Image 1 (cartoon, rainbow, N blue to C red):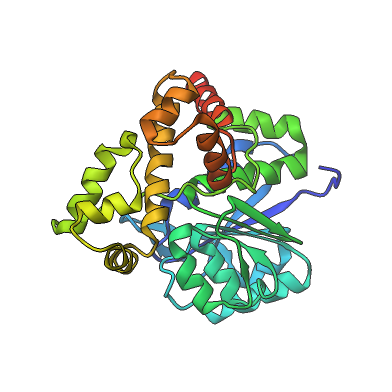
Image 2 (cartoon, rainbow, N blue to C red):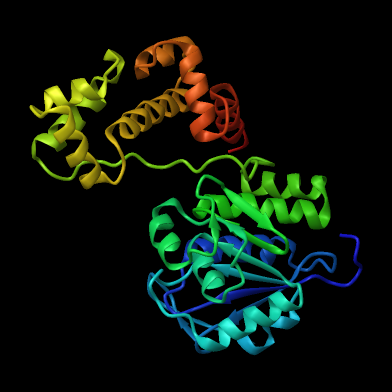
Length: 322
């Protein structure tokens, strides 16, 4: 870090605190450099009351005050208790003042809802967990939401996607503040890749049917027969519906088209084989229903932001480090 002045970090906590995001923040910005004068100087700050109720039970007593937030160099919001929960007015005011002072504001996952509620994301690019995308877009139309990003920087504001992406963003912040060597040391300690581009897309899980109607049975059948090179017409035929009716019911039930679902299913299967086997890319393409290995590569890179080979190397590296 070029500035000799200690970099002060505030980790905001709240009733219903998400322990996964909070734990990541404390581990990286506090515990990792405990006792080091050249590391972040971190304080936990309560946004509600001094005694915080944890999401999984238990309580946390906090000394830091929300009124002091604008005095910190970095203010971190590790999630939020619920995307529809109201944000306390003192917290909104403190975030606005901090933004006006050009402090660095960081959110993990649903923490972006807090920054957006404060108005500091208006006109800016941001991201959050993919499952919150529709709700976020409806509530905050002035924000340029990019759900296909792991993390986003727009000026002094940084936002990240789901829980794992908060680690990627944190490593990136360490890289900016302390350099590549320190970022890599921290990544090795956390057993995560030293760098994942923010432009890499989130891995969106495959909708799994929860009902036993014909549509649910067809999707279960499709997952077992991906290697057959399925088409949406074939799915509609199996479901005993016209293509038009099948497309309409599918979109109503799952919020995406059958064509998108089928491609996601193929990509999920490809990820499985890349992580768990040493099969050649050509054979994996066949197992997943892609016409050629080139088709798999093109769809994989377009949808996930990395090539199959690079994806495999990343997971192999993590396994060796573990």
